[in-house]
Image (tube, rainbow, N blue to C red; front, side):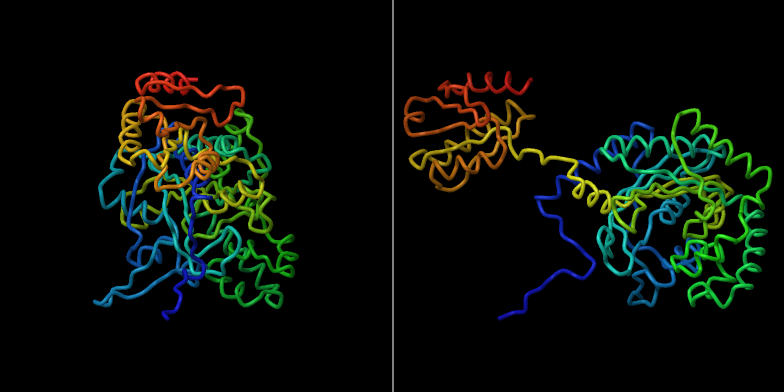
Length: 425
């Protein structure tokens, strides 16, 4: 007997009982993106490893620990995409999309990171992201945040807060980086191995440490706000003023730095307490230098990404949505009636009423069994084809939801008219 094959650790299946949540969630989010003028972009699952090394940064968790990387038969190093921004930048550059032409783009698809699987965090995960190129001012950052706020409202999420910070310009970050290194060197005995490894390469990431001892000294660490240029302060204040004018609440978190090297100026996270420790459901910020770092002309850019998996878990845990019905109409056929007769009538109805979902029972099940299936499908009406109906050239219609509805017998043409009126409501 062959060994049973199971899925890989950290990967997942989505069955029909749950896939409707994914579909509705994705349709809601992408519908809002279209409303704000964003266009979809698609890029490969596999990229050259060098893309992520140069864009994300050599000393980051993603590059150091989490990428699925392997060599081709010709010895070229390639990786499964761990995030979408670097691939988006490569795509717009390679296809000449941003020369004097601002772009508002979105993507949706699987990403891959080799990390410890936990609730809402798998090695394969689905991410939806928005990326904007060619707009310098903070107004586009504000619009991104207003749009995501509308997404939470459309999804029915209430307990979500926005945290903001600014990392300033490259010059600001460099000045802050130097004083931060000095500060942490004075507390070297408190730093763990991970923090020591980051100290001279990416000290801002230490501010994100979950180590309680390090968190204790971070309270006394220098604040980036003290090293911001007038330009950086003005850009951040412009974002705050826009959000205030539109009535969007936020919290300024000076230790919010984001984990990837390409961020500058405004960064943000949307956080919920309903997912436990892994509470970030959307994050992003401005990355004005990344296009230039990848060989393009200097181009301001900003964006965000959100994990669909976490949002699905949140919607399930909070029981926010009810499953949609499988069918509007269910056709039940007696064993004495030919299968061809049922199929033919079903196709006539589907052609006449394309917006009505009709399930035609297959096989030779009993009436009782078919009615159970019709009820489980959520259908509003059952069409009954018995031997008597076939002999008389008619059909019977029974309501599956209204007990006061009297079962009716009618000709097929009248059935089309009847259903048309019922589903106009």
